[in-house]
Length: 231
Image (cartoon, rainbow, N blue to C red; front, side, top):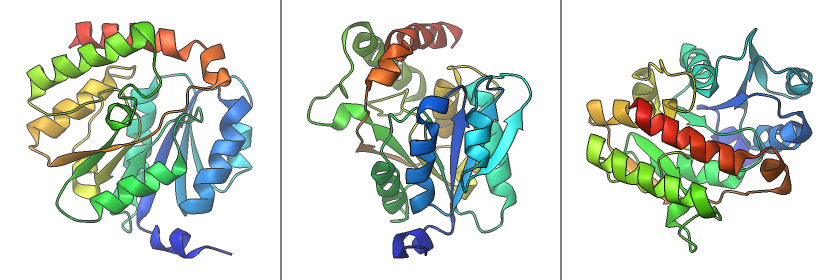
């Protein structure tokens, strides 16, 4: 039986790029699908059972035959979401369990106020100011923020947070050409070029034993450096 919140989210499409997240994906999708009627999983050439887990959920499942990178997966999901005439808000979130579904709801609530075109989740606005990140990653996140403020003029505090909400019109401007982590900067550059009105709200990021076992904190620090160099 759909909840009242579920019914209120009929015009929202949630895009979740997935690559080899079988260990946590079922729990992530159970949580998101209980809140949002339309969840679009883009399996980006996973070699584990991620695609089967997604197909067993209530999500729409799109597939890349080969791994093309997170940016390409997000672009595929955005295009599918915008083919649906009812979609007025598009949310992106990660598939590794680091994002909280209630934070996605808060992004949607914020964008519904009508005074902004995009709402970005920021782990830097929380009480700790670093979202629980440590060492090299925290330094790289701050470097990325400084670079993005300089290059785009956007007053952002977090540049590599996958939790975002766009109006339909703003999402339609996205043409993500950088398949890998550089897509995060590309999204912000597109917002700047189109003079989109943006807002940030504090969100939590859970650095679990699972994500640490995959080396995400350190690897993504390197990805951020590569991203900056590519720009």
